[in-house]
Length: 112
Length: 112
Image 1 (cartoon, each protein chain N blue to C red):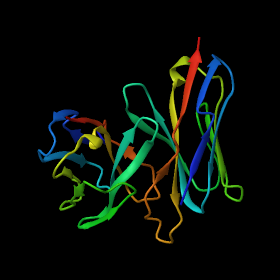
Image 2 (image 1 turned 135 degrees about the vertical axis):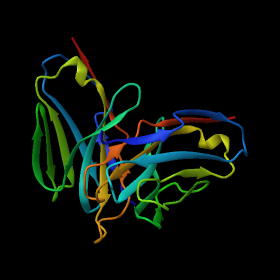
Image 3 (image 1 turned 90 degrees about the horizontal axis):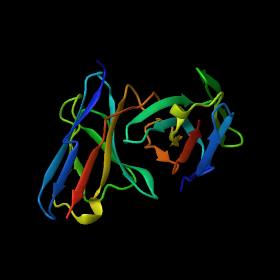
Image 4 (image 1 turned 90 degrees about the vertical axis):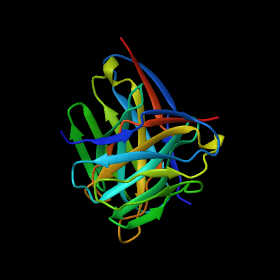
């Protein structure tokens, strides 16, 4: 089954404790991206990747890192999480940027 | 700065009614996406279009590139159409790789 998976789905952590949210797709898609969704602000793009080893900043990259060492995986790294990074995070992939996006189920992160 | 405005923000209608959700944007784009987000958070891509009109079942999406405007129509609405509908645009950059900018969404409730 074609899908985008994210782990964990829910995470409560404390300020400053490094964490990684994994994202994996099984559709051989070139393009992957990370978004955060906050009440009143909607969805905002954090980072995206056109291909292996090619990443670029979205609208809200501060406090986040990404890597794309393999085509299927695009982890989101929070080196030192802060409470303002409490949010709902979505990973998405598509064959090319100008194609339909497939979204993961979301990761609800709480930083206390 | 690219702005994406959706209207209305909230819409409550009776089952069977014809629904229209509007999206306006401020810059030239490569593509426009319509997304659906059900309670519980999952996001599904409904349409991606760069010109004209697309139809899928009871859903119709149109775009007017000159006027920088798109509409999503739902015919014979049903309570299962209740969801948040999100418009997203990809600004034109030549390579088509720029990130998506999202509207804040339209919260639709269809009452039986």
